[in-house]
Structure formats: structure tokens, C-alpha cells
Image (cartoon, rainbow, N blue to C red; front, side, top):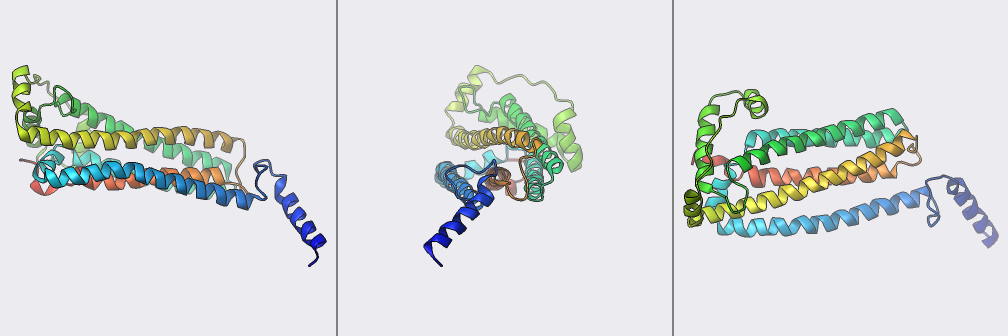
Length: 280
């Protein structure tokens, strides 16, 4: 093939794709742009793995050092709500995958519907986390000046007694709409005495890591909501179709990564001490 013909073929190929409004000027074709964007997202996710890896490494070190207390501290977490949130995020991954598939097929309305469902499930996840964190605050498990391991254990024993024998659904509903008794907060003397207990300091480290890891995960979900809103806006304009759906696919990769992080967090944080049973 002559140089002239080669130039002609290249020009025609560029003309075929170059007029698409989504094609950036520095790419030859939508295919090349798609591959570059997907590669860029994978590189970003690798950096995120390194970011979370630091916290997972700290967790591994302190779990090895304070293994027994990490197991007991894990029992303070609510496995019922942890299971519920795991199911919610798995469903959100399904709806996100359906949004990507709808974009590939050029179905604008289903894209919006699945993205909306993903956002709703994401907000449901954070709503459950709010109730968990609220409870942690009430029983003084937030790792700050009034952290009181002794008080938290006492409250846990009471909760286990009231929930014993109840069906799973009843337990879940009770977290949100059940009657919650008022409890007197721990006295200053009790908090000061608790600080001198080595076990309390070891449990405190577990909750430092717990709130750091789940907090950063929640921040990533908030970022995901912003991305969903942006992609949904352009989907409403009919931007995506079989020839161009890269932003939806990139968003899907990000959301699946956030979900996978939780799949690791759930057993490491919630199931660590499950074999000890409800009591201590």
C-alpha cells in the first residue's frame, strides 16, 4: 500500500469518529479514547489500593499485637447491621452493572433508573452506618477523651440479653424503630479508671482503625454520589450510546472498587470475634 493510500485510510478513519462530540482532540478515535480512560481509571484504583493498604497494614500489625482484645472489640460491632449493609452494597454493584449495560445498548431511561437505584442503595448504606456510629457514640466507643471500654461492654451485655432469640428481621427493625432505653453516661471517675486499663487502650486502637477505615470508605462513597450525579446529568441529555459509554463504565469501575473494599472490611472488622459469641 502506498504512502498516499495509507494517509487516506487514516484520514477516513479519523473522520468516521472524529466528528463525535465526545471525542477529545488529542485522540484518534473513540476506541483509543475509551482504552486510555479505562487504563487511567485502573491506574487510579491501584493508587487507591496502596492508600487503603496502609490502613490494612496497620490493622494487621495491631491485630497481631493485640489479637485477643481485637476479637473482643469486634464483638462490640453489630453483625446484623454489617450483614445488611453488605447485601445493600452487593445490590448496588448489580444496579451499577445494569447501568453500564444499558449505556452500551443506548437505553437512556434505564441508565437513569439504574443510576438512581445505585444512589438510593448507597444512601441506604450510609444511613445504616449513621445508626451504627450513633450507637457507638452513645456507648462511648468513639476513640476520644470519653472513650470507656468498661461502659461499652456493660451496655453490650444488656443489648444481647434483650435481643436474644429474636428473629433477624425483628432485630433489624428494632435498630431503627425500636424503643431505646435511656442510660446514664459513665462518670468521670469511671472514664479515668478505664484509661488505666491496658485492655481498654488495646480496644481503643481497634476502634481508631475501625473509624478510620469505615470513615474513609464513606468518603469514597460520597465522591461516588457526585460522580453518579454528573453521569446521570449527561445521560439525561442522551450523551451515551453503543459508540460512547466510557464515563458510565469508568464510574462502574470506581463503584465496584468501593464495594470490594467493604467486602474486605466486613469480615476483618465485624466477623473477627464472631466465634466468641455475644458475650465476653
